[in-house]
Image 1: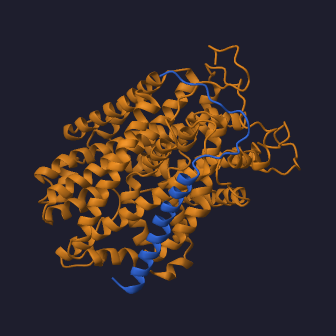
Image 2: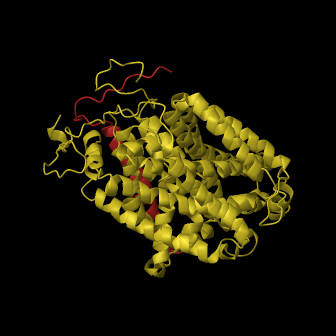
Image 3: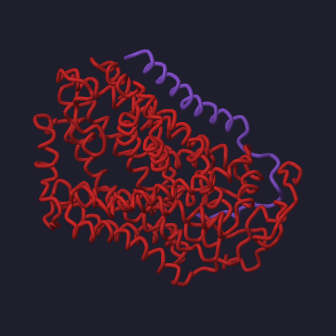
Length: 47
Length: 535
């Protein structure tokens, strides 16, 4: 494998897998918006 | 709704729900990650500039994939319905756009099942390695018993028919169990198993002789390719097809989220999760191809069948045959094809089932059986025979390459240009999500629509002028353009039928007032909106 192929592979891995890790961390840290407008409660659905 | 005539306006109609955010994310990833991630992405990247392809690919992910994913999620979540119902609530005359999505899913479901059935067969063949001696001859001759191209046969192939029936039975059962007990459970178990299996495959592949050369072939950049517009179109096409956009799937899946749900940030997880799997698959596939080239004393460039069904069912069996411990590797590979396919197939059929439930007031079980039985019969007649592969190849060109692009253009046109819901959807996302879509979101969606119109025109001209795949004109007229005519007919005729439920007693939440918009759609608004300032 040539050096430029290796660099492109590593950059792709960092950006794409890094993007996944970062977006999971973002959702995990703040799963829901605490400032939603009022209302919007759903009625329960019986199974 | 009918059972609660006393319900106050802020209580809402009953709808099935995901059990939580993680379940939704896994189901959406399960839908997006399909056969295209495994056999389309690596070949596309290799053909279009290798490592350099990653640049337009990433640009396309951020500028088209994520914005359209947000749009579909916003439509489904705000207007809470299957594709036809949600689109009708977007604009009174846009119901047909939703039915176009449903018709595309119907057609794709018919042949997608056949490919999963082949993978089921090959999973079992792996243990005895019956394909080892002559993989190409085995696939088209012994297994598919392929007849003549451009003909239609009703001679059934039992070894295709049996797994095909089995896949349909399993799929109908999953759909009939409903969102929570069926679709969600399949994905909560299936997606982690799929990722773990593929990690084992990739690690094993990287340890083979020649693996580094194979991965090198995938990532060796040809920067000159970046000046070729076709390379950019290929990147946008890959992102688009891979993320399952404009099938109505994300509209349908988002409609099963609770109203008070975070939409954009989980969407980012889905988008990056899909591309992450695709990248993993690319490394695994090319490491394996590097091994095959090494064994045959050639380079990856000297190999045939680097993409599509032939990559999976001819090239991979050739690798498995030459590899120590091939039986185990083969079972893992075909097992993961089955899982990746099944989680996508279920999402495609859920679009149809949900639409029938909404339109005809059916229970999930009724919707699933209605879709399943009709589809299963057609699928078996079309794809259980000796000419199934040709039909699949042809129908895929028209439904996938032409139909889906039309589904996306009409969806954007209905929501933004005719329905004038752009700001409403943008503020909806901002109001419920932890991450705002941003001021460039609508701008990007409009720009993507223009690109899609160009892609549609280019594809249509090429199909009209050059035909496809060397099939005879009558065959393409019946099965290719016939597919397009079917999609159009469904989109035009289904809106004429009556809704069996009261769909107009619907209040979007947050209300337009809560979003600082005038009551009437299309009226000019001047007031700025700060989602944090209006709690």
